[in-house]
Length: 113
Image 1: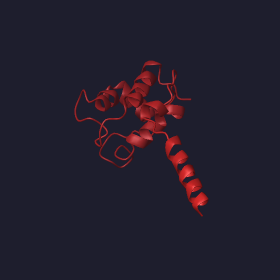
Image 2: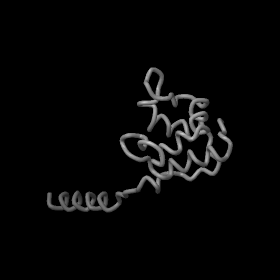
Image 3: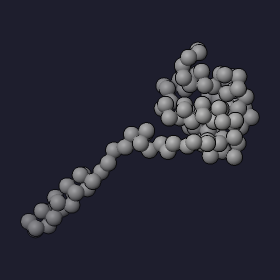
């Protein structure tokens, strides 16, 4: 019984030591040529659609055309950076990596696919 307890303690210790903690920055892959479908749509769905969907009082950000138009008008980027009006999303700023992906998407020509 004592050997079993020692073995369980050893295995538990190994599991605890082997666990890693990664930051969002470490898990976010840098994309040099982001597209709406592959990269931006997920960011919008995760951070914006809760308030910016059909039927809400805010501009819709559900489709490629809606997001592109909002970026071209300057609203999306300045709101997520907090340089104009209330910062979006209202729950708090997005990670810088996501903001940079949206900015890069806009500067590379709003690729869809």
